[in-house]
Image (tube, rainbow, N blue to C red):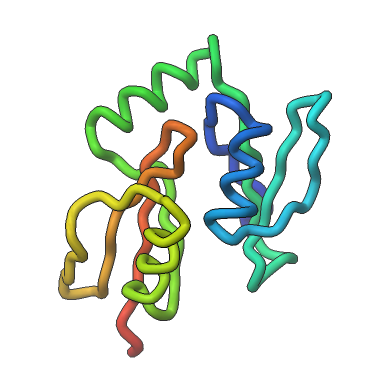
Length: 128
């Protein structure tokens, strides 16, 4: 079994689609503004796991999203080959980065705001 689609709560899927494709570098898999349907995939792995940018306004997911954000908990992590390069690209794109780059034993990580109400994590894993 393999994960093919995950749901990420966002306040506005139309705005989230714009942010995820223009600032974060994802590729649009499916987009229908009238249906509030926005699905993105990694540009480097378009056949990989897709992210459904799920509208959460007025639903139980909105309180979950707000609580996770207030507790500084990232809802998803993205793996990259070079965290410093990726974080600089995000910063230049206007993405809000959280604490300074951290270097735990297992790799490099950092948290950033997606601009849609979520905290997300970038992680660079050490090669084995």
